[in-house]
Image (tube, rainbow, N blue to C red):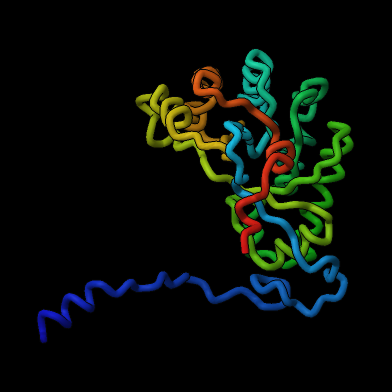
Length: 252
C-alpha cells in the first residue's frame, strides 16, 4: 500500500501557482465587469488556425516597424511576391512609419497596441486607449484601417476581449512560430523546421523588431518561401486565410 500511495502521489500534477494575487474582477481577467459601455455584441472571434485542406499559410510579423530589419523583410517579401500581415506597434509606427510608406501593396496591417504592454494585467478602458491610439496612428501613416488585433505575448484576459469587441476587432494569435533561440548556430535549421512542419491553415509568427536572435529567422525567409512553394504551398494574408475556411477556434 505504501508503494501504491507513492506511485499515486507521483502521478498527481501540482497546479502552477502564480506569484501575484489575482487581478481585479472589475475589468480585469473576468469579462463580466458590470460595464454597460462595453456591452456591444458580447462575443469576439479569436483565430489561431484556419481549418482548410488547401495548402496555404499566412506569415505574420509582430512589433514593427523598426530600423534594423523591417525594410529587409519587405524586400524579401517583394522579391518572392509573398503577402504578409504586419501587426504594428503604434509608437513604432510614429517613429519609423516612413519605412512602410509605399510598401504595403500586397500586405495587411493589424493592431499590436500602442506600446506593447501585457494586456492581461490591464483593465478594459486602458486597453481601449492602447487600441484606439495605435489604430489612429496606423490609419494616419499607412492609409489602412486595421481590422485585426494581436495582443502582445498572446496574453488574453477578459478585459482584452471586451475592448476588442467594443473596437470591432477580431483577435488573431498563431499556430506556428519561429524558434530562433534553438537555431542560433544553425539558421538553416529554422527554415527547415518551418518548411517541413508547415500544415494547411497555419498562421506563422515572426518578428521584425527585437533581440538579435530574431534575425536567425528573418535571414532564412527566402529559403522558407522557396521550400514551401516546392511543397505546393501558397501564401495569403490572415484575412484572406480566414475567408478560406472555418476557423478551428469556432468549434463548439
